[in-house]
Length: 393
Image 1 (cartoon, helix red, strand yellow):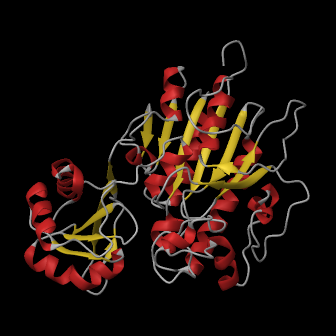
Image 2 (cartoon, one colour):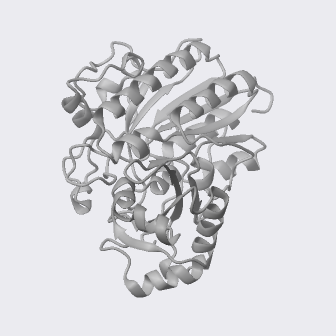
C-alpha cells in the first residue's frame, strides 16, 4: 500500500474440508454432503481448539467443536462456477469461474480416445478407468512393472487425467515430461483441466506413492486476483500445488510442498522471511492422502496438526497481517463414492481491526471473496471487474 505500513496476507487452503452441501449438490450426486460434520460423527468428535476459537463451530454442526464466544471473521463460501475439482475451487478463490466445457470421462476413457492419448503422450498407457489411485495401483501395478506402460485413470466427476508410474519403470522426470506431452498434445475436446503425475514405489502388494506429484493444468481462462496483485506491484508466493493449478500464472515465487508438513514448514519460514505480499498455500493431505481413501483417523490427525500450526501462526501475526483459512471443495467420508463433493468452503480469518484488536463478524459469500479481500488488504483498493466482496476494511 502506497504511503502505509507494509502488509502481508496468508491464504491457506485446507484441501477438501467442506462444510455443507451447496444448493445444487444433488445435481452432482452429493445431496446432504458435509465433510467436517460427517468426519466428526465418524470419529466421535474432532479436537480442533484453534480452528474452533476462530469460529469453525459456527459453520456447521461439528461434534466436538462448539461455537466460539469470540470468533474471528467466519462464514461459508459458495462456488462461483460449475464443478467440484481442485482447479474449480482454487480458481474460484482468486475470482476465476471454470468453464463447464472442460473434458470429463464419467464412464472411463473409451478405447479410441485412449489411443489418442497414447499418441499425445508418446507412450503406451494402461487402464483408463474411473477409479481412485490406490485401486488403480492394485489393479494394474503388476502389469505396469511387466510392460513399462504407465497407468491412466480418471474421475467420474472431475476434469482430470492421472498417470501413475513406478520409479523403477519410469523415473519421476520422465513421468513429468510424459504428463506435459499428454496435456499439450490432446485436442481441445479431450484436454482436461489437469493431468496429474502420480509416481509410486515399493514391491507388488506394498505400492506407495512418492512425493513427486505434479499437476499440469490448463491456464485460467480469465484474469485473477493474483494478476491484479502483480499488476499493482505486490509479490505473490505460492506453496504447494497452487502454482501448478494456475499453470504458474500470477506467481512471483514458488515453494514445492507435496506434504502438509512441508507446506506448514514453508509458512513458518515465510512468516520469518516475507516482508510484504501474498502467500497462497495448499495443505493437500486432508484430500489427497486421507479424504479420497476415507481414512477418517488420518484425516482427523492431519487436521489436529494443522490446528497446532494455526495456533503458532496466530501468535506470530502482526498488525499488518491477514490470515485466511478456507477450502476448495469437500471430500465427504460418508459419501457413496470416493470423489470430491460439491460443498461450501469454510471461511475463518484473522483480520486486524482499526483499534489494534481483531474483527469478528459473520461473512457468507462466494469463494472469490477471499481473493477480493487479499487485494483490498494488500493494495487498499478493490479489484474492479472481478467477482468477490471484501470482508476486510
